[in-house]
View (cartoon, rainbow, N blue to C red):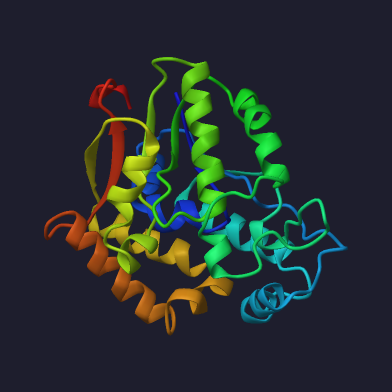
Length: 261
């Protein structure tokens, strides 16, 4: 059975699940990363300060989206996974009915999904289009980024459409480092009783995960001073999750047995 990782943005699967993806692909399991918010920036996007800040920092040209897809493809290749890119627009580019940016600053981006956000109307359709015979991995919503909330809601609807289908929620690194309450807050909003699944990483898988994250060069400055700082941070967090041995952590609905995946 295929393992399908829902990734809101081009870097999320590598950041949060890269070690487990390497474990699966090296074991010969079919793995696909589905990056949902991968569409081009609409040409009429208002060039507000928040958009300009991201475009300049990412240094991928006037529309960073094509460059981010290239980074995503390189990262997936390192992990040994196939890649599918969706047609949803990144939150920072989305506008409301009045034509204004819906998420013009960090508080809005990490707040609630706006009532007139067009992504709301796509959640059901995307969920119905997902194949039923997969093991699904989806963001927990740790950090409360609006795009992560939307993809989490897609996964929850998919689960309701396919009762008993195996699903695991991943905790979003590095938001989980920046806010130590993020995981419990997200679990509370999930609406499911969940238990932790600790997935150990071999040393080579951890280093492959780091290489895959480094492929997302445009995103490194958002969180770290450079690639070396990122690598140190990833190793430290993986060791903390595994209580001294590198690991990643997922959250499994209690009605689902761990053997399902």
